[in-house]
Image (tube, rainbow, N blue to C red; front, top):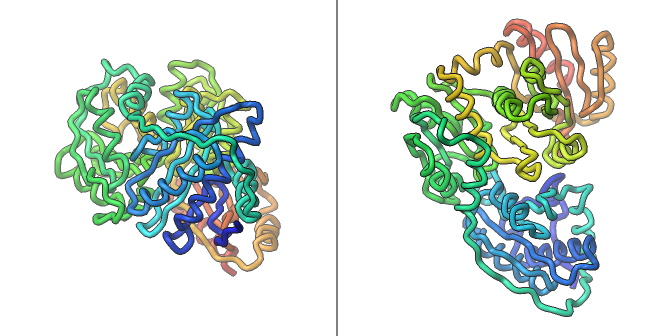
Length: 455
């Protein structure tokens, strides 16, 4: 039977929309069947396939999980239901238990009315529009699924103790100092996973919003927005903490605050974790996306690593890391990827590695981060543009005297400043990121490029 749905819910890296108008239980059932059929097509010789299924704290999660699981089962796939977990715990489960695929029901940092599905194959290989999602969408649109000779089974499994042990294996727990840390989970899944990990550490946690609540009564679970970091910044100052941490809704991204309550950028965290990985893997390749500060590749080289510049986007980064055998990859947006985590991202592992860096440095977080925060950045600035290709051509013409590349949108580099302009995957937007060696230059060049984009 053909299912009517809004095709725009299929994004570049996941399926995401408003419940129940765009994302209904009926659609979830069809998606479960489509995902099962896709996996069966990839492993035709395998008699039985098993998928790990988790969900976050959103109120629509149980309904969507039941329907999605039913679709998998009726298509002949076994389900290991791990309940409410973080997204990085699902990636862990798929890799650790050698499952054939995984699904996390989450809308990450989106408002409460949203939900979605992050899907992966075996070894936590994420699906994207080019790698699986478009194919699954076409199956659902056709509404034809072959009947299964068997009905799958559903089993429950508690994975969080195993997940915690895995995360802790990346650091020397005995050398972690007894930090006082304010942790804001935003009523998201970090509220469940943090206690499993931190019960093994000597740290004192000042908890903010650990209660799982998909209505997000305190603030949106999107720490990349400065207004959602205000509470953890205040807690750090009031409780005289050594640092603060915020997780997004599904707890796969992590953001830091220093002991003064000042924000520490995702690029800085990328460099700090890279430094820690290079202690264990001297000379290794480290991947960073092209929105990160110039300070990141400089830091990687200073610590003996080989920096690799990448496009933005987790499926692209994971594929490049596999191809290049990079031990670690980081993005400005708080995604951090580890080779020994099946190339998947984990905010928790990144946090633990940062704690190891701060413990070794035996200095305030602001002091450790300072050498990496010596340039001025614009942040990401979005502009609605009617004709994106024409506008990009105009920008290239205006800055033809700079060093130009097209790895992701267009990047123009000069000796003391650079900028990247790239189109949104889903909206008629151009995204500008600009960095300069000093604030005055950044502000002048930012206003100059923005004026050209918006003219």
